[in-house]
Length: 365
Image 1 (cartoon, rainbow, N blue to C red):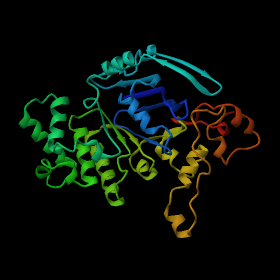
Image 2: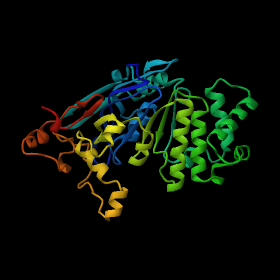
Image 3: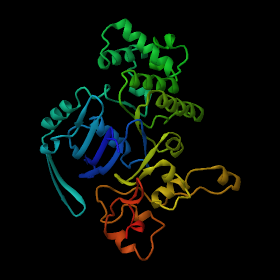
Image 4: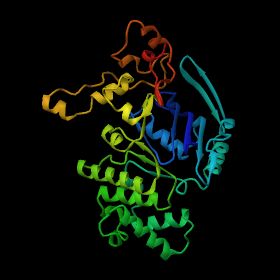
């Protein structure tokens, strides 16, 4: 197999909650890959670690304590590096009884080393579009000027006129109405959908190898959501850009993803081809994935006027990590044969089909 563009291994990103006087394991051992020209969807409930994973890849997590371990290997035609190389030398971790007791970190040294590793990466090699496009744009600078600045910073084009034409070109490619007129618009004078198109234009204007889309349709009405999804699909077909797509909306994940990673409690519980993982009738399915799919409305449920299935219980507290399966307290597929294991031992990701992995004792002999 070809070398993946992005390979995340055992990523751990923790934060200190002052209100609880304890460390929160927002991302706790996430591993996944994004291949060339591939879209990998990351899905899960709020608090599962999706956005923190993306921000860790972008180097947007601050030093205290932030990313404390793992590796993020990036390999494009121009750049091959581990974006976390050597950062573990700035961290000392003490754990016990399912809790992180202390994290001693040279925050200044870690931050300087991280910025050095990310030099020339953000915007140029890896671009990101965020959940709230209006908040991500500078309200005091026109949209066109912001895209022009991104072009001049990351594409090697220094001439203002040439950069301006390239910005307008990308506004046209994202199908924003009257692109030359919108070039001079401020974010406050544009709708949420138009701001999202402008953000996509800015992200792609430097032709990065990897696009991270963090909840790109959140806050938009259904019609605009569908148009943004269509736009992302069209741009992927045209440019061949690899994409890490983060969403809690399974319909968006279904339409755009080649592979899918399901996150729960800061860890990947299922990972595999979208055609298998999102097929409700497939034989191999993590109980959490099955519950997510059962909670999505479809034509059959609407015709039958059936109630949607809710996932009982709450997302686990990642301060006190349970010793067993993190979905144990909410799972409705536990059998007597595996109950003790589910309660006491955290399962590993197990291959259940070629390229398809599930973290569940039901599939481990």
